[in-house]
Length: 438
Image 1 (cartoon, rainbow, N blue to C red):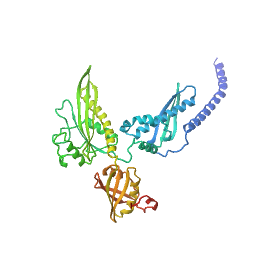
Image 2 (spheres, rainbow, N blue to C red):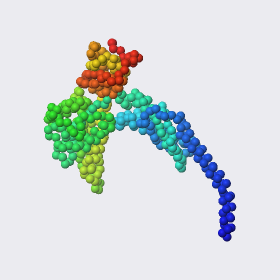
Image 3 (cartoon, one colour):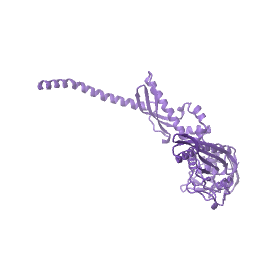
Image 4 (cartoon, helix red, strand yellow):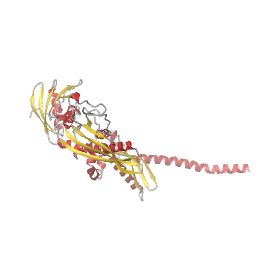
């Protein structure tokens, strides 16, 4: 019986071996073909080339589409879906929350509803899957961020060549257990750790604003010669902000209260923020802002904290938008900024600086008033003030010299050239357009 079983097994194995060998060969052939197909499909849309733009413009997104009858069409629809999702992501990376909030209608109706192809440098499918009735792809997309940024600036979604103002916050905070508001400035200041101010400051920083006055180590107003008559002394707030070279002052109050609404052990709490926004240079009130937020909690402290944090979040987003719009309107007219330009052998450097000034979109004209062997006095017709111009120049780079900016006021500044050690002569072609005489 055992011998018969063994013989039968050998016959079966001899019969199956050619089939198994054929199946193995077919399996490896299929693997090679699929590998070639997937490699080609990943780059079919565009040639294999290294993206020339930065990694920050590379986005990976998933896309999916329902499979009806045509699988290739479903795949292409899934790719288009992934490209649109990547385009949404790159927009959110290039715009601040305030810029998105202010321009959401335009972004939705014009930018996202249009064709993103013109801003795509390359894309490749890095994975795909067919499950049930859906086709899903993962697509890596590289965007031409320079072209997209240019479009956003043209449509005024991004402020071009203008630094956002520096902001100083004076926000008092009061909770039910406080007999009077807590604040950090003035002679009657109380221990102060404001949830509202911390949240507003965080939102402003996310929107690329700088804050004057260290939130951890507060400036001492009296050491700077500033004396507050009360917590609501706006003039003293503006004077202190001017000492710290801030552009915008925000004063106001934050109040947290327990509401009468109850559901079981849960109560509701209201946080209210009221703010006034002032220009430091003019002292004028630019806008007012009021925001409420309601939180629910079974814990009294957590409920009050949450209401203040939520009110601070909504106030911060609105504040960032209001300041940006006011700053743009304030800088919409060209103003004459008097600049004194000096430095050893300054003339050749001045030629290159002037060429740069002439090319800037927020400078209308540069007029030479005085010119000597030691210095030049020029009037720069600039959309903004002297401090904004100084901040803008700080971002410019020159091959043969650096800039030392001093005596910066709203109407004037001094520019001193700092020669670089590896300075080379300026080419004649570089001087074109950098005229001196009017």
